Structure formats: structure tokens, C-alpha cells
Length: 366
Image (tube, rainbow, N blue to C red; front, side, top):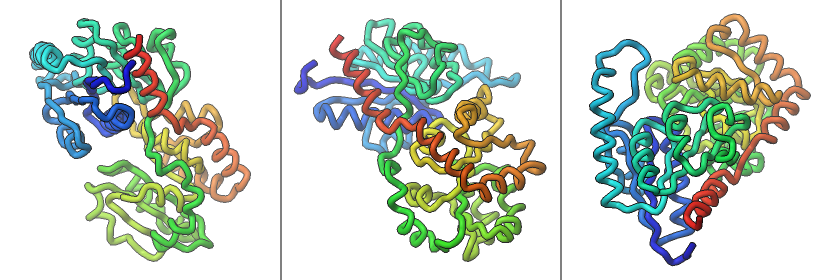
């Protein structure tokens, strides 16, 4: 492998931030090692990657592709035509760009792109973020040269000889949040003598979590708990009036490092990247997974952590009856807090991006 060679990398992943962020992180690491490298992203025409990837400074082309709907849906009738169109366009893209390696991070668009690349002998690597593999990556695994995973036990889905346990790319500013506690409390104008709960429902927000927090505001007040409440942009207008000295309502949290640093306990969804970040942060976590995602993968992500005594899990249908008991158990038990913190931190993979790129380098030099 030559340091001065102009490598060409084609990267596909999208549909959600959970697929897009790892793709961009991998590209950034490759670019730092090979400044002359050329990059081309391939996404689905109408999905968020068409906006997020150019914002990160990379070129992207779109395919006419979408997933199969789980319910009976007229859109499913279009799927064969979309797939054929995307396979044809992928062939044209690869013929023109001539990549040295193809990288897929999940999402509909990566299926035709990586399928065509591997058939043409271009070495391909896929990265699976979740503990339950997605349909796309399962379909691509037979032809991929390497499969980078974030969880143990992925032999259930992929050929074991191809698997490398790397973890998921995470923000590097989360590596040492413990040193930022004082700055974080000042930033959010919080009382250092009270416990702080951080509530995360994703950038759009989570209706059930927001409803829970709203209903429990008096419970938090009686327990002298202050709250950083990231309710999401869809819900901000509804809940912003609950902002007080002890309740800080935000649509977004631009300083996630400080939000994590301020927290004593965290309530979160269980998307793959959120779980990876929470392992790095090492605070007591109560997962409330979304039941409305494909193959219920958030529940499976959470269960993989809970199984190692590293977090607690509450399902949405248990919130009304079990939330206060579960939360109180963590809040009032310093030993439990320490156990959860220590165990979740053991699962952190802070060098995931570097390790994934090293696997790509092995493919280039093979």
C-alpha cells in the first residue's frame, strides 16, 4: 500500500443518522491518512444523507431506492423496479468512479451499490452498528471481504471468519467528559448540590418519553432531581413552557459532551450510536427502546447491555407502572450507580473508527 497513491473510496450508507454518521466518520479518518484520496458517497435520493453528506464536505449521488414496507403497501409494488434501476445506476457509477474499495454502513442504498462492487471484484467492507443485523448487511455479507461489528455474538448473522469486533464510530469529544462536570453544570445553569437527569429522545424526539417526563415533573421535584430534557424539534413548542430553574427543555443539544458531563443518570433510546456513546460516557443508564423500528433492534441493543449488568431497561408499556420504582432504585443506591457505570464503561470501544479504517487498509494491501 502506497502512502502517496490517490486511492478512490466509494461509501454508501444512509436513511438514518445511525448509518450516515459512521460513514462520514470512516471517510474523515481515511482522508486524514490519505489527503489525496477521492471519495464518492452513494445514498437514497429522498433521504437525509443527500443533505448531511454534502454538509460534511463530500460529494454524493442518489439512487432511486427504498425498503420493503412491513405492512401491505402499494409502495412494495415499486420495489422490484427501484432495485433494478439502482443496480443499473450502481454499475454506471462504479464504472465511472473506479473505486479501490467499497464501504457500506447499512441502509437501502448500500445494497445495490455494494452488491455491484463486490461482483466486479472491488474489495468491500460492511459495518453493522446494531446487535441484530439489518436486512441489507445480511444480504451483502456473503460477498463482503470484512464485516466490522459493534457487538459480540454476530456469528448468528455473518460468516465468523469475516467478522472483526471494532465497535461503532463515536465522537472523540466524549472521551473525557468526567473532567467537564463543573463547566457542564455552569453551562446549563444547574445546581451542583442536586442530582441531574439527562433525557435523550433523538433529534426528532420521542413521544412516549416526552409524555413520561412531563407526567413525572412533580416526582423529580419532590426527589430534588434537576433535568436536562432534550425533547426534539417536533415537540419543543409543546414542552418548552415547562422550563424552570430545575428543568431545562431543549429541542437540540449542541454540546452533547457537556450534557453527558452534567448527568448523574441518563434516560435514552437504544439506537446503535447512542448505545456506543453511552458506553464511552460511563454513566448509569435507563434504556427506553423504541418499539417502532425494524426487527425491534433497539430492544435487542439494550438487552445486550443489560445482560452484562451495565444498564437498566424499561419497555414503553411498562412506564406507567414501573418507572418511579426503577428510577428510585438507581437514584437512591450509590453502589448500584457505581456498578452500572463501571460495567457499561467496560463495553466502550473508543478506537472504533481507527480500527475500521485499519481493516480497510488491509483490503487495499491484500
